[in-house]
Image (tube, rainbow, N blue to C red; front, side, top):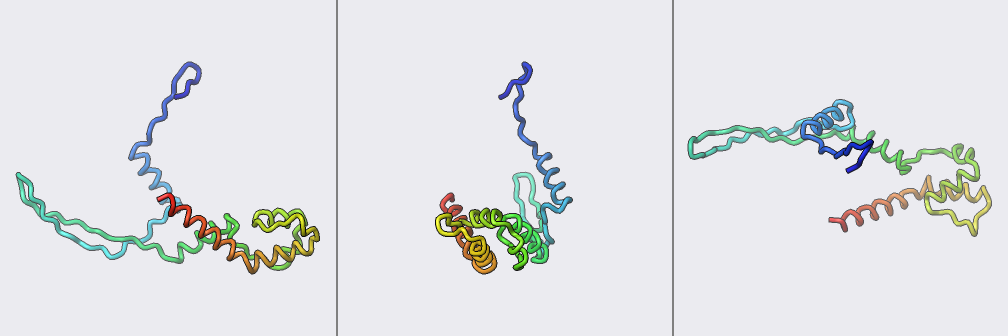
Length: 152
């Protein structure tokens, strides 16, 4: 609880209707993709109560999201995380020495004791990002996977 100008404010939980409206809005905006219904199956259920006997029908189906929709979303996410870099040699030639050192530091490959030559640093960064970035992604993936498995 928090007091503001003599008033006490208490957080109120979101209602089910608010949650449904929020999800519908995100679906309409394209933030959530529901996919398309696949393999609908119709089932009949026999219900026996003290008062009545009845048959009820209901349909169960799955949802499918095509890879054509998944790939662009994953590409955007991986680009934001810095996992996907599609640079050519001219990009690396235009980087300053400070930018190169910052990127090597992000990758955990900067050794301040050994390397001070900007050409060697540029070559190392090009080798890492163009050839060996898979290694960093692999370690990142394995670390996250192991960490998540330990939580459950």
